[in-house]
Structure formats: C-alpha cells, structure tokens
Length: 165
Ligand SMILES: [Fe+2]
Ligand SMILES: [Fe+2]
Image (cartoon, rainbow, N blue to C red; front, side, top):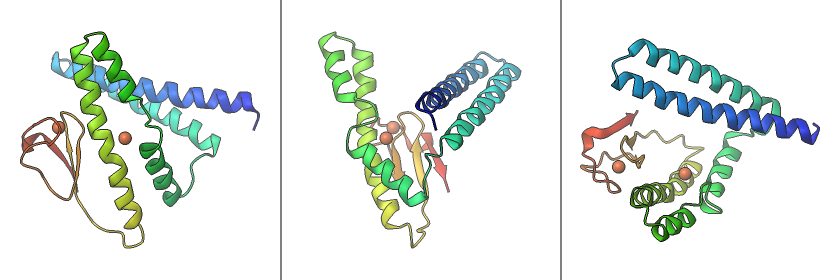
C-alpha cells in the first residue's frame, strides 16, 4: 500500500475514533440536560463513526492474532506509555494547574495497572481463564476478579464499579 494512503487511513482511524468518543460524551451531557432523543442521536452517530474507524483499521491490515494483540498492548503499556502522563504532570505542577495535575496523576496510576492485566491474560490465553472484571466508572481503575470495597485509585465506593461478567 502507498505510504500516502496508509497515512490517510491512519487519519481516518484516529479522527473517527476521536469523534466517536466526543459524541458519547455529548450524549451523556444531553442525558443530563434531559434530552434523551438528542442523546440517542449522538450515540447513533458515534456508533457510525466507530464503524468508519474500524473499516479503516481493517483496510490497513494491521490487526494480527489475539496473542499478537495482547503482546502489542502489553508492550505499549510497559514501554513508551501511550500518553506521556509523567511529562504532562510535571508541566501541570510547573504551571499550577491543579485540576489537570489531578487528572494526569489518576490516569497514570490506572495506566500502570493495564500492563499487568495484559500479562495475566497472555499467561491465561490457552487455559481461557474465566474472570469478572470490575471497572471504576469514576477513574477507570480495573480490578480482575475482585470487587473492591472502594477504589484504590480514587476512593469511589463499590457501587460505582461496572461489572464485566
Ligand atoms: Fe493503558
Ligand atoms: Fe476509581
């Protein structure tokens, strides 16, 4: 595939992925403001954008086997972090941006646990271990198999966890 087309497809993938996330947040806002039909429209368009991004990834033929995908995900979490939270955090402290510093810290702390989850899943790939994941809806912390009384990262109560059976 021509490099320019590869680049265009990557832009489609990242652009559509970003749009989909933003539209989902718009939908939450519409729900909060009491517009369920508008919320639905935002969710529908977000789903449509996700299909566009997915198609671009498929045409790029960059998606390997599940074992490869676990390895790739493990490496991207352990090596260079996908988002440079430590750099952002330093910057936020220097500039006295407390809200941003809090967010960068919390995200980084959660990110640090992702690699471990992938490692565990890689080890269990053949045995197909059955587990339930619990995700803190406040900060994104993921617990494997145990519903914590409160979130170790943000302190949210266990009612705030979403269960992935
Ligand atoms: Fe991560
Ligand atoms: Fe949390």
